Image 1 (cartoon, rainbow, N blue to C red):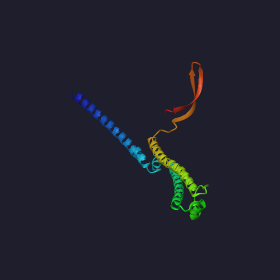
Image 2: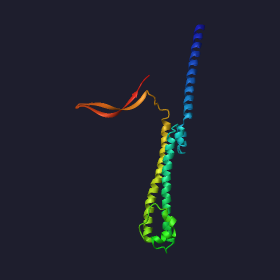
Image 3: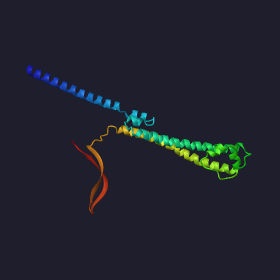
Image 4: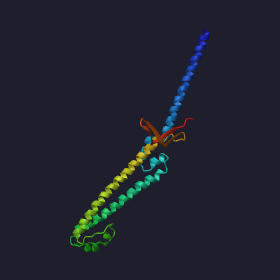
Length: 207
């Protein structure tokens, strides 16, 4: 009876010890995952991406930061340049409206030579009315290009946020030599014969 009781106590103690060890391993594994998630958080990467280049920097894709800055800065400067030309033509049109006594292009250029010297495209009409029609045409074209540039800025900005989000999801993706992806020629057998076609081969090397 005593022997059975001792064996039962030993088995119970061993079971409790194993359960505690399993719980410790589970907690340790959970804490490890939490630590890894805290180190690199997808939401944080996406939120930081609201600042151009910050999400890429957080994902340690440092080479992408100047690309994001350059893309947004380039499209932004293009928008600014178009806007300046649009405002210059708008000033010409305003001059024609405010000064009805100026009836020829020469009169307009003489009145404000600095305004006409900075225009990207010259006028070909000799009358003030003709210049006004040309001005409206230039303004319409510039307005359209400026809208495209604005949507270009928004597009580049959104793409930079998506890029940071995708990189954050793939941050722990296995890119070791044991896992590779390469093009290959796939041989397909049909009843009429065998055919070769291009494809992609996934190679997983087990240790």
